[in-house]
Length: 305
Image 1 (tube, one colour):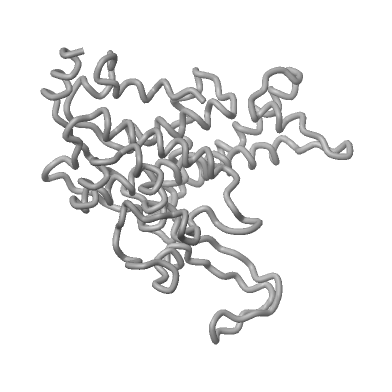
Image 2 (tube, helix red, strand yellow; image 1 turned 45 degrees about the horizontal axis):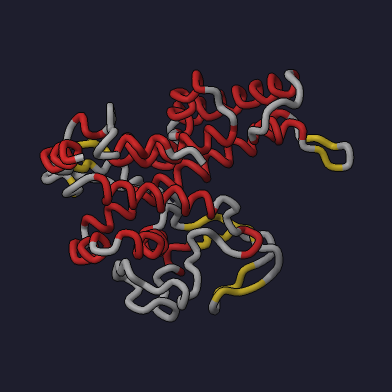
């Protein structure tokens, strides 16, 4: 996997990256380029379309914050049609390339192929699941570190040893998805509350991740939990609904978070900056997280090399 964009944080090379100043916005300048870049690469989105792809892939997060906005609905419908047109173009060009769009275009089972709209819907689902949630995980975890200085100090003392545990704790403590709608397949009950076949139920993963019967100190952010000895959190779902992109998401978060705190000296939330969370019942992310680091220390490190 190409992680070249992370090199712009390198204190030696960094020709035109974050070292151009001492402040940046975590989501727009770092977390989203990581996730959008990888998903676009996997799908085979051409470079000429990457800027528009970035804009459209952010529509899901913005639409959850304003679910009644007709502007978002219209743009997402237009995007669906554009994706379908791209699929038709790939299909007409023949089976060349190993990107995911091409693979889906020519996938076949018992002589049956997906329609253009079906492929477009799969692409749209992958973008929604692979971009927004992973970027939000990075943003939410950094916010948790910056608001828990004792845990931040513990992490900085052992970045190599604690990054994986940090990511899982970030997903448990403040995961990117609060819950998802499901439909009951049969009559059942939750606690003493009866549910009938066909009822819609909102499963709140965030509540399960703070269950005191499962996790010690469930409402505390603890970067060095031993996840080998703990039950899995539910931020990636469970059973047949388990996230198939989990390994990619974990790798992006691991490389991204370690690079941030290893390469940018004195990284911290920008003093006096305010942050807000995306409202809504599904996606939970900080919409803006202004960051600052020590430019003089970075310049000194570059000069010393």
